[in-house]
Length: 80
Image (tube, rainbow, N blue to C red; front, side):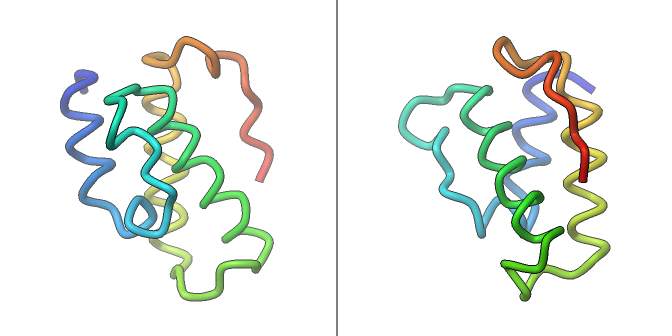
């Protein structure tokens, strides 16, 4: 997957729709990644209840697959 493909894939996910979409104005991949990460984290802990388990798993896979494209989050642990 390329970085551009990752962006397209993220923008198509429901988890992204629920996020702050911080990348919209900046086109910053790290902002996109952090937005998805934040939603996954709060959905995993039950704070966001309208996200289905398969949607969380799709987003978690995306986070793991695309972490290499980040600048700030290359070593961030995805612990949930």
